[in-house]
Structure formats: structure tokens, C-alpha cells
Image (cartoon, helix red, strand yellow):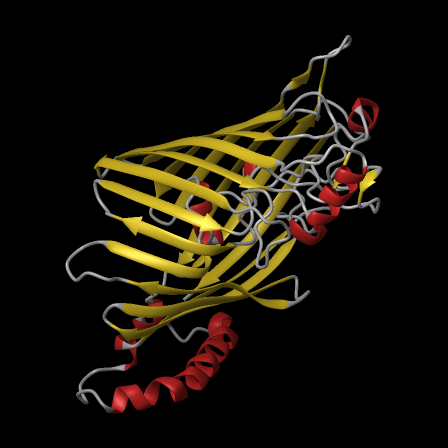
Length: 411
């Protein structure tokens, strides 16, 4: 969690007056809990020795996405999204801290997006144990969880696009699966929950998983391992099956201009409701999502080049085959002059073929290109303009284009 911005002074310009009020209101409330500990220490230490804080307000706008190319949780779109969050870190001691992030999307509800304790057992060694609703360890884009860290407005397909895989429902056969191609936003199957609902993305970074995490090292090598309730595509607060997910990532940074990483995960994604329906059909058995990822970043001068690929496999009890998919993107960012940059991303998500007499891909492949520019009006205020085009091999709407704008303020 990127915190610590609370020691900065923000210029008293009119466009941030409202945000300053919200920020100091939150800090004032929390300082009441911090004050007793503060009084026991030397008087020359300030609030920042115990409480770090930061926040972000971001709003994006584009036309309605009737093809659901940019759908995320709760049928919201990344191109039509207002998001506000506040991050807090309370340092109880040198080796123990409590962190949380409070967030709302489109004012639908306010929730604790993250809440966990961080324990650093050994002084002088980079070893952290985190327990609670913890950050994901898989992949690289998941670490860019603030809108200011994303040079464009849309998300990569592997981190956002809804497939026709459901954790609580399954197709009775290949005919049902074929009918749901390109309909991940509104799937319906006859086994398990028969209600219409969105399917899973390969990786859902919108919600964090609950469990325990270990991080060892920093540069040039970092290792992260996590045991959590849910899976990449379906993070959970409380588990809905008896299984757990094990995920890990190795990050190597041999020089400041080159970073690469390797990730892996395996966890049970099916719900008890689906398992009950499968057992009744004589098809019981745990269903797992297994994933593997590679990522890299190269920077030189005014350029930053990033790339990432994710392979995912979902087990299927009702079909004679497992369901594979691969998502990959390449992204470039170029600084035109101080405060102004241009960016582009090429993105593709494809699905494995079902080997029958007439083979078909179990979901419709999708391609995307997004280009845009961003301008920093202030070191804490960014605006973006982007153009996005999507192509899909199927569905009632096989292609669509969007012009989107976004404003991001953070402190």
C-alpha cells in the first residue's frame, strides 16, 4: 500500500479545497486513537511517526459499454467509474502495523477494500508477514492498483474481462457452453445456480483476498507467498468451499532499468452450491483454477515498456475437457515533455479449443488497442484522454470503440 503522503503540504487551490476537508476530517478522527500513544513519546515527534495516510479520487467517463467489454465487479465499467479511497497505516510499534483502505465505487457502497496486520519479526531484515485482507502477490499490473499508476484508463483484458466461467454454476454440456460464448457479462447455466450472473475474469484485482502472506527480500530479488480463501478470479472474504489457494511470485530487479517476474497460483474456485449440484449428478470433485504468469519492464530515457502474460486453466466436472485461456499485453509510455506523456497498449485474450467433432473455442477471443495521453496539471492532479477499440470473435456486439476521459487527484 502506497502511504506516507500525509507529511506533504498540498497547495491551497480552489479545486482541491473539498478534498482537503475530507482528508483532515479523517485524520482528526483517527488522531484521537493515536494521541495516547503519542503522549508517551518525546514531544518532538509528529503524527507521521505513528500514522501514515493517503488517498485518491478518480472519475472516468465514456459512452455506455453495451457490449460489456470493460465490465468489472457489480456490472460497472472501468471507463464509467467514480472511485474514492482513503489508505491508513497505524504504526503500533517498529515491528507491527495495521493497514486499511476504505473505498467506494460509484457511491454504491463503502467498504474496507483492504485490512490487514503487518508484522516484521527481525530488525534489519526485509521479512514481512501480513494477515487479513491482503494485497495480491500474483502478477505485475495488480501492483498498479491506483489510477495514477495506470497510464491509460482501461484495464488489461486478463485483469478485467468477464469470461463465461461461473463459480456457482456450470454448463450441462457443450451445447450450453457454446451458447454462452461472448456472454460472460450475463451467463446462465442449468447446473447449480440458475440465475443470470457475470462470469469470472482470469484475475480480479478489484477485490483482495483474505489470508496470510509472506514477503522476503526487496532488491534485487523479492519472494512473495500467500495462502488465501479464494482464487485469482474469485477473491473471498469468507470462504465458500473447503479449499484454499496457494500463490507466489518471484521478482528480480538486476538493474534499476530492468525488472522481470514469474508468478503461479492454484486454488479451488467452485462453491458449495455448485458442488452439491454436481454430487447430485454423480459428478462431484474439487474444481481448481491454476494460473501461471510472466511479466517484465524495461525503462530507458523517456520510455517505459511493460509486458505481461497470464495462462489460466479451470477444471470442469460437466465437460470432458479442462478450459484453458491466455491473456497477454504490451504497453509503452513515452514522456513528451515534463508533465505530458503518451501511452499505448496492445492486448489479447484467447481461449482453448474444445476437442469435439467440430472444435470450437470455449469463449470468444477478444483483442483491444488503447492509446492515450496524460497531463499532470499539478504533482497530485492528473488528467487522461484515451481511445479504445475492441474486437471480439462472437457475441451480439462483436466490436466497439470508446473515447474516454479521466481525472485523478491523490494526496
